[in-house]
Image (tube, rainbow, N blue to C red):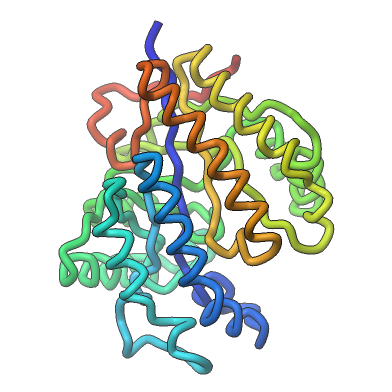
Length: 295
């Protein structure tokens, strides 16, 4: 049987991720908390030699793009440099130029944002193969492919994604229920989207603020173990993702939860029972399946 696969992607955005509904607290946390959290995450990945795809908002590398508030909330070349030189061998992917939303952007704006991101990546010697759509707002796939990107993500796999098709509120409720209960995440497979390979996400490692504090770590740990096991059983991909901001609250608990999972995944990889791959590695899939795993 083909070994299952684990892919972890991280949306690195700081204040750019909430530029359209920014609060003073968002700015404070992005400037104060993001760097120690990223340092702790990098240390965990190094400890277990697990590479991830860090999808970076390109404006984090462009000081002239910084907006009002602490510059550290908008400009973070130090974080990107630390990721790039980590021992784990991470992939640097793209999260757009300035975190615009491709489902509502004009074609001109989409092309412009991608051209800006490509320019920044090239200027810093960074890869430009993988693209995570900001806010999972898929659109203008032709522009994404034309920019030279090869692998993208804008959707989840499983019942939550179907609930989102009913409406935004239904999707939010379904997402919370899914994280609250030990429902096994679905495995994903690569899907062809024209010239692009699309890799759906299996599970979000959710933050612990507000009602999310009731999502208990033992449930999250169980779900991640189940997701990995399902990928192994089906030969599919367990695609785990999160933002560093998901560690703003109850950070030590969150790091312990992730660390426990990375330790287990590293053991499985050592025994050849799982492959750990970055998003960009799927660009070479010669004939990606056209649908996600049903098992």
